[in-house]
Image (cartoon, rainbow, N blue to C red; front, side, top):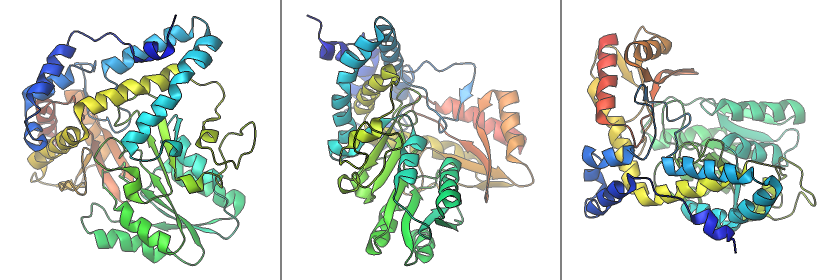
Amino acid sequence: MFSSLAFLSSITKPAWAGNLEKALRNAESVDAATLAGEEDFWYYVQQSFTVSPGIINLNNGGVSPAPKTVQDAMKRYYDLSNEAPSYYMWRILDQGREPLRQNLARLAGCDTEEIAINRNSSEGLETVIFGLQLKAGDEVVACKQDYPNMINAYRQREKRDGIKMKWINLELPSEDEDYIVKQYVAAFTSKTKVVHITHIINWNGQIIPVQKIAREAHKRNIEVVVDGAHSFAHFEFKIPDLECDYFASSLHKWLYAPIGSGLLYVKKDKIASLYPLFATSDDPLKADIRKFEALGTRPFFIEQAIGKAVEFHDMLGIERKQKRLHYLKNYWMEKVKDLPGVKLNTSLDPKWGCAIGNIGVTGKKPGELDSVLFHNYKIHVVGIEWENIHGIRVTPNVYTTTKNLDKLVEGIRAFV
C-alpha cells in the first residue's frame, strides 16, 4: 500500500553525498571557528549546489539557490502533483504540512501552534500589518531603513485608516547598542501601538538589537513586529529570544528552501485578535495559526520541499554556517577596507553583522562599481542607493569560495 509518509521522506542521494558526509564526519571534532577557514571542507558543501561556474553570484541576500536535494524534491513533488493534482496535492502532499510545521517550530524554538507556512516575508509581514486592529490616530514607529514593501504597507494603512507613522532615521553602520535602542524609544508616545523592527537591515547587513527594543516597547504596552527576512537560519537565535509578538521570514534566503517559501510566527496569545490576509471559511478571529494559511490552491511541491532544506540546514549546523558566513564577509572586507576612498558600510564585529557586507567608494556611484564588477569580472552584486546608505551590497554564501572573493577584491582594487 502506498505510504504518503514514506514518499515524503524518500529522495535519492546524489553521488557527491558520500563525500560530503565523510567531510562532515571528519569535521565533527573541529570547532566551528577553525572550520570556517578550511576551504577543503567547504568545497564539499559547494558541490551540494548547482550554481553556474560562468558567474560569481554574490547577491545571495536577494534569493539564495537551493541545494540539489531541495531542487530534486521540488521537481519530484511537482511531477507527482501533475499525475492527479487534486488527489496527490490535497490527500498526499498536504499531509506533510503538520510535520513540516513541527520542524520549522523546532528551528524557530517556539510552539508548533505559533508557525504558519506561507510564501515570503512580505506576505507574512503584510498579514500582520493589515491584520492588526489599529484605528485612526494610533501610532506606529518604524525605520527609514526598513524594507520598501513594509514601508509602503504601513503607508497604505496610514492613507486608508488614518494611523500615524513615526519614522526614525538610523546612522549606520553602528556598534552602539544604546544609540540604536534610544532612537526607537525616543519615538514612542502614549499613542504608539506598534513598533516595526528589521532584525537585519537588508541594505547593509546591520543587526538590530531587537530584544532590548522589544522590552522597552512592552513596558509601554506596544506590540512588536519583526522583519526576519534576512536573519532566520542566517545566524543563531530563537524567535522567542527576541521577545517579539510577530515575526516573518523568507525561507528561500538563508534556509535555502525553494523560491517562494516563507514562515510567519504569531505569539500564541496574539493569534485570535489578528485578522488573516485572506479570508477563512469560518471565524477570522479564531485562535488557530492555520487561519493564516488560507491561500486557496498553492504550490504544494514548493511547500513540501522545504523539509529537505531543513534537513540540509540540520546537517550543516547553524554554528558552522554562521561562522563561515561571517568569515567570508570579513575575508573580502578586510582586504579592501584600507584602499583609498573605500568606506565600510557594515561592521566587521559578529555581534553587528554576518554574511552581508556593503562598501562605498568616495566620488563614485554604487551602480558604477556594480557595472564594472559584472562586465569585467562576471561578479553579480547589487548597487544600493537607499536613504543614507550608498554602496554595493555583497552577499556570499556557504558555496562561495575564497577564490571567488579574491576575484571580487581584484575587481574593487582595479576600480579604485
